[in-house]
Amino acid sequence: ERGWHKYPPSSKFKQDDEVGISGTKTFEIVVSPNENKQSLPPLAFSYFDPAKEQYVTLHSEPTAITVQGGATAPNVAVQQPSSSPVTAPRGRPPVPNATKPQDILYQLTEPSRTAEFKPLYARRGFWAAQSLPFAALLFFAGWKIRRARLDDREARRISALQHEAAQLMHKLRHDDASPREYYSEASRIVRLKAALASGNRGIDPNVMDAEKAADTFKLDTEARDRLRRLFEQNDEWQYSGTHNGPGRISPENRRDVLELIENLG
Image 1 (cartoon, rainbow, N blue to C red):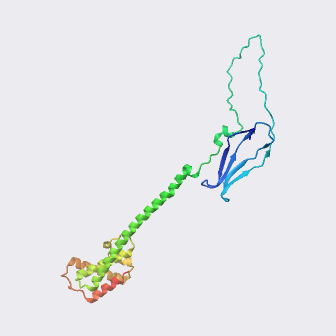
Image 2: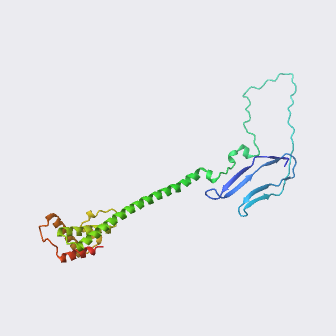
Image 3: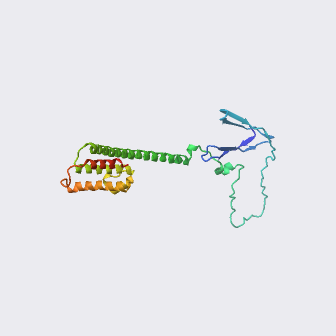
């Protein structure tokens, strides 16, 4: 509309959440009448209404105003002639006025006060914040892969120990082995079962002795003594040779050893 001087508009955004998606945006525009006006013209504002799923245009009502003042005639300085010479006063030269002319709009003189709205993805901290969960996801995936490999390795080790123990038990029940082989295989089964029952990852069955095995299975005094005798007999046959003692194991001793091993765990 003619008769108005319009200044550049400005906008301010006040967010009401942490990420800046929701908030209130305020638009400001300053107009100055160039002639006598009785009211401000109606203003129109269009926006998209997500509830109605369409664009909506709002119109304001005319606002009555009063315009005062008018054009001011410029002041003209008239110099009177003088017959006497005029001597300029000595002293410091006049200091020019350093005050900047003030405009009616703070947008022109103070542009830093004008709020600037940036999309969320264009902000500096947005992508930095997104990298944190991504890095955590990579770390978690790597940890899960490493844990799966360790679990698979441990599962294969346990399966191998169980298979070895089962084969040795089969030999003790059916083979007519010499005392040296019999007590060696029996003590080996005890070590294997103790390593499996300990719950300690990667424990070597060879480090198991009679006392550690008894503590693992929480044996009573009688069972501990029987387990010690089994390991002692194995040591005697391993280090003293087969020529000392009988060449066969009695059925009673076989049953006693098998009963002891089967009751472990």
